[in-house]
Amino acid sequence: MIGLLFATMMEARPFLLACRAEAVESGPFAMYRTDLQPDLRIAISGMGKVASAVTCQALILVQQATRIVNAGACGALHDSPELNVGRLLGISESVEGDHDVFGKRLQPVPCTALPPLDLPAARLVTSDRPVFDTRRRAAFAKLGDVVDMEGAAIARVAQYYQVPCSLIKGVSDGARPLDRKTLLQNLSAVSEQIAQSVWQALKPFPGVES
Image (cartoon, rainbow, N blue to C red; front, side, top):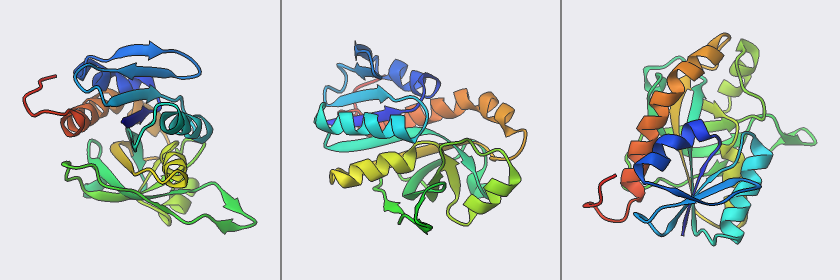
């Protein structure tokens, strides 16, 4: 069983439409299935590390997921053409940027590629608060290439249960002041790109059309 996790309905909707998903239960988070890929469960966790970690754990323990995939938007931490808005990235490792233990930062969690996708690799920093200021952006840029609010928590839970975890992220903004508006402007298009790529990777037969 593959567990696919989105943080928000805005990010998930294009994928749900592409695979003709149907809701199977509600609360504490929404869960979906699709007849086009019976070995897939799609969950919408809500934003933040706690919500995504609990949802990931439920996918593993309740839904018996043997692989976790998290897909969603991220902000760029560097001004680089490789991180322009609209770029899809495969996360190679993830770390919590706003968490340490007695002053010592946790080690990054390695993430696996999602075959057959061949995406540029990037390092992810996860923060419980959105990053839209230059000071925090500069601090997190020392740790990684892009930032989100869920990925590292999901990867750490999957690592705890020894389940492979892939993080697929689409750049929606530059994590700079005033980029809240940029994120909202780009989220729909970025989510469409993610849906197309992830569905191509996860659907079981090449002949199945979304």
